[in-house]
Image (cartoon, rainbow, N blue to C red; front, side):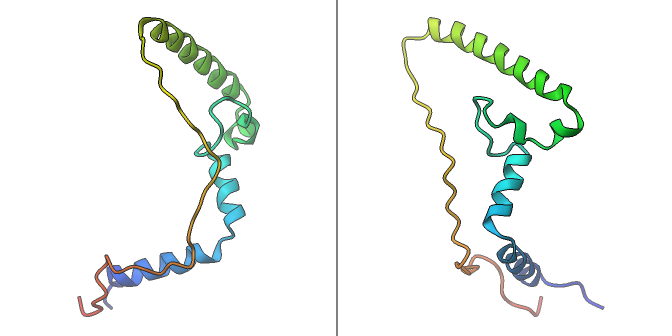
Length: 107
């Protein structure tokens, strides 16, 4: 028996991702702290803190240290940097352009 080709695996993964509701993906990203806000307003959504509640305090302590260091750094710098954070995620699930992958099944 031959293993599946790379293009076959890509098709399987693409089809599987299309089956998952976008809301579930967004919720999962929040639970894993991939897309939570950096200001701490969404820390309660991070799943690991439900099993390890002391972790949220460690995160807040770390964030406070980083903010303190940033304040010191800002005082030393004349430049201002604008950082824009957005919760908008645009995913085109109908796109099936996999032209970058080898579609030759004979490999």
